[in-house]
Image 1 (tube, rainbow, N blue to C red):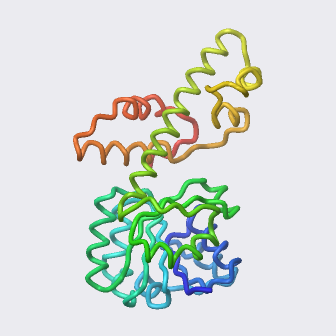
Image 2: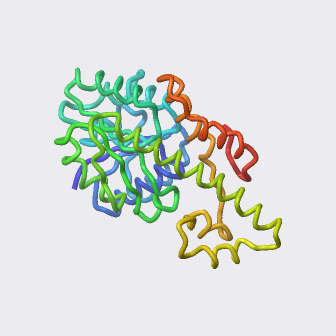
Length: 265
């Protein structure tokens, strides 16, 4: 059992915190939305007034906020995690971020005797609810080993990707493959529809073929995919900063702009 802090209690972070509670951990939580904190307190968590207070109670702090700016603010800003973290604590960044954000925060934390790991997740909201996430972890091997029992309370797989920042690289590789496959599947199924075939008929025909994929499998029951644009925008920003050409990802970003239920904020 560990003292764990969770910052960011939205669809992902809230479910992750509940699984930590079910795993027997002591959990301290913070979010700018008070009702989300209150709901977790009702489930047995302890409320904190700010990220600093979360870190004062926790050996491991899990950060699951929206983007690089929010992550930087809650970790290194005023009343942030690093102001309250004890030497030997570990901060686990679970959002999809730019590797340079992760390494910059790692350097600030190291000066205070605190470890930072980047551990973006795959599995989506349902995986967070079910506790079946996969964590793609970058950072010091010793720190990864120490936090693995905590991560295993929230997921089925903890993958050590390599040095700090490599978890984000692998996550972005996953995102490019995921969303470009979605785009190609939509185009292919439109082609089939023009020839009078339903998605169900295509699924039946392709189930033993190399082109079969999760989108073909789930097409009839496919719910919203709200992270398409955020994921691809992050990947393209990283690529542009390093002058890496990713024309397929860029085209996919444009092709999926009208995807239903995509959140553009």
